[in-house]
Amino acid sequence: MKKLLYIALSLVLLPFMGFAQFDGEFVKPKNGRFLLQNATIITVTNGTIQNGSVLLADGKIQAIGQQVNPGDAEVIDCTGLFIYPGLIDGGSRLGLVEVGSLAETQDYAEIGSVTPNMEALVAVNPNSVAIPVTRVSGVTTTLTMPSGGLFPGTAALINLNGYTPDQMFAGFKGVVMNFPSSARRSTWDRRSDDDIKKEFDKAQETLNEIWEKATTYHRLKTAGATLEYYPEMEQLSKVVAGELPLLVEVNAAADILKAIDWITSKEVKAILTGVAEGWRVADKIAAAKLPVVTGPMLSIPTRQSDRYDAAYTNPGKMAKAGVKVAIRANDAENTRNLPFNAGFAAAYGMGKEEALKAVTIYPAEIFGVADRLGSLEVGKDATLLVATGDPFETRTQIRHVFIDGYRVPMSNRHIKLYQEFLERSPGLEKN
Image (cartoon, rainbow, N blue to C red; front, side):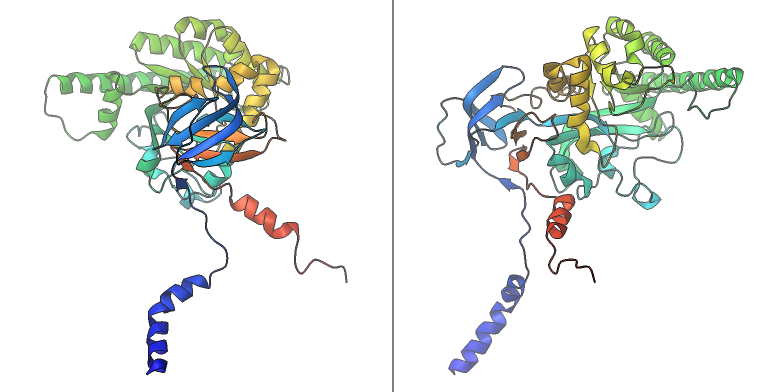
């Protein structure tokens, strides 16, 4: 009888015994109450707090200062460490592409030139391998953008934690427009000056025709007309109405001036992106009061006659002219390098404080989410990083990252491969 009981008990426990046979444990993001204690706190908007603490609960910053009661929170000793707001990348393709050389894994470009209704948020892959790689560098939030064509789609601001795109959505969307370019595509571009001008004029004409159509569509919709299904114009009509901003990608100095004139004439709410030669016309951008998302800094000059540091100094020169500047990595798998892009901007004229704002509070303000992100203040989202020093320096180690109150695991595929091959057993021996 006892033997039969053992057999029956074994059958009941068999599934659980099976789980116990797996080696290693997958660490998931952890939610709860946390007190980060005894740290130097860089609030960004309210100065620096020495030997301070931050209490996180219910996804928000509940308290911050030198005297904070932990209550039942899990205490994390941060002696000798620094707490910063989570870094915000102003533009990338993170989550929209897995392997750049495989078309099957690319979701950032739709067929056609006018597809503003293509929502980047719908295509985001929450399980992208590049997301954990990015967030352990302190980048907690990014604007993920479609590309290609005149109106390639609608970008979305996402937090780098969540099981679905909706869980990751951070509260901002904007329609992307690639402003017609009158610049040569590269030093290999053999088109004549006349051909370049003809192509630019044609592209400008097409842009104006589409905009006129969107304006007409909005006017008819507002008047209560019955309209046929037209998703492209439906999305652009939201820009005409001011419900969505226009993210205007433009880089050459002459094009920036034309884009400013176009934006002003259409009275559209716009953000300039790219702006590689913004330093040449910085006073004009400042006078137009247009915010800028620029980058990457880790780039070569746009013209052979430019100084080697043209890209490095660009954000600093625009900031000194009075432009509100945010920084982007403009990449996918290398969005993790955002802190180093900001570091170059800081070292080449922008200054450390302004560069920090360019990846925290300024993008939060430009994207309209400064009430939740971009600085360490009571009531804002519990989205921050804990580091051994300045996050713009390569020697700095990021020890903890919290996104929306979740303590995310400080691991990724790169770290696992590093640990796997650091000390091999059996080792490699020369025969």
